[in-house]
Length: 172
Length: 340
Image 1 (cartoon, rainbow over the protein chains, first blue to last red):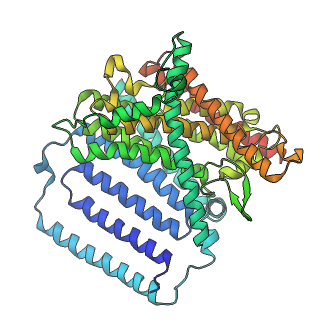
Image 2 (cartoon, chains in turn orange, green; image 1 turned 90 degrees about the horizontal axis):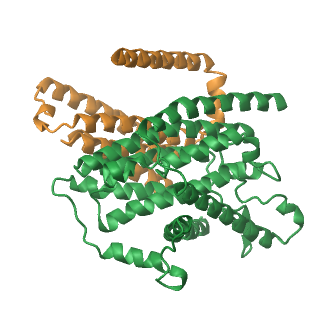
Image 3 (spheres, chains in turn blue, brown; image 1 turned 180 degrees about the horizontal axis):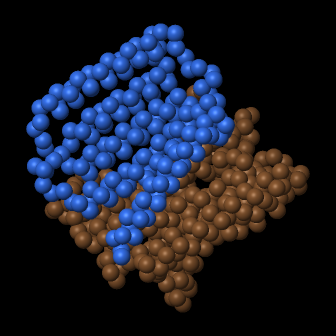
């Protein structure tokens, strides 16, 4: 592994991402969990930025940290969960499966990191410089992947219509 | 690489300090202008014409006792003002305040960073501004703060939509998301305010709502909510919210100038045949004057219009601004594709 400036920045943000992810699932207070999750999103977005994916990095913040987490925060605040005991659970098989899945995830990440740093991909692929820009993402989205893209918009439309129907029932 | 880092660091230092000093003086300007609008004098005792008043204010706030309510969530209560000021100050990073300048034999871009997703960066950071306010409202453990925080988040989420959609018109005309490209495209008479009048009005109104300024200052409507989300804050934490509010106003003015009022462009200045250094300096001056005018406009509106009612605010946001901004996109897209 080479200790270049970029690698050091990426490793720093990766460490923050992992640390905040662990903090997020271990905190008692849901609001604190949400805050650590935002920190996690930020560091993941910084990693995207170091990999020259500007568009994905910004969308990560705009959509997840900006929109979804605000709604999340709203729900938590308005529910105002005072009772911490409700949030603890003691089902052992869940813990067991969680540990196994975490080990699997860690090993796959470790293998990727090992091959990524020691193997052939020592430097960033030059093609990646242009792939992450909004122009290339847009071009791919509207040519190669136009059908799935339209399909996704249809699914979202169904969601919007569903929300309106639900809200109307409540007011009538 | 070393010299570039140094130049960037110098640019960041200068820009952040200019913004902070402008914050101090827009508070002074607000008090003086409001006084003249109401036929009073305003602060005129500290220093000549009261010009040292901002420093006296800062000193007063710094010396006050810092009170945290006993049932407040202390870490989040401390974090919230920091988040507010962080969002307010980082937004300025992509705003170009000039074209390029030649100093000591190297060409320096007059912008902290020119990312090619500049507009998305702006929108992403403005959407984060909600956090500081929501968290301050919640962590104070007081009903007035909570109401203020929730009101303000609902308001910001509602107006963010029309704000983002109104910018799409500008992007369609320019064909780029970089703010520097957008300014360069507004050469001569082709300011976006002329090409996108509807988009400009939507963006302007949405900026007022996003910065929580009157007539959309419901989060701090004092007759109902005492101080709104910062009711339980004092000393420098309160000062940070105050700072963030005015920094947001200044950044919003800079963004409006960049997107719609031609940024640093003065009509046909490049064709006058002035020496390049003079042109560059004049462009910075033009940019500052435009921003100063927008700040004055913000103050002017605040002391001229009464506050909206909450249902009026929501109706305007969802039933007027949103359809209007979508119609604006459709019309702009048709015209742009026809002219191509």
